[in-house]
Image (cartoon, rainbow, N blue to C red; front, top):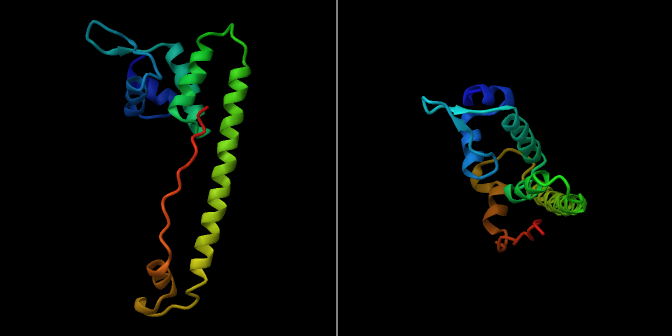
Length: 143
């Protein structure tokens, strides 16, 4: 199948497929005599795997690690379990960060309960006077 057919089958864009090829996640396809990419079922299956991993918010490095294990099916899957456990821990950290962010936004929103001129808006004042903190360094969830 051609790249457009693969994109339709995988419900993604042609650019996404090319990006995954350049990123080394999807192998380069064979080429026809007219130099068109020619994809097979293996490409479609791998693309589905990659897209499912991305839908679970996995990084390209995590996906690469999983694909390396998939490409060596005789290996023990303990490494896959470990990778997923680390990803779950990362999600837990992210959930805590999002809860903290929500709390900060709610506190800010409480500073302006009625419509008023912008120069007296509590949200604007809060944003102007809020302590600026260094951007937190997120611990990588890659092992």
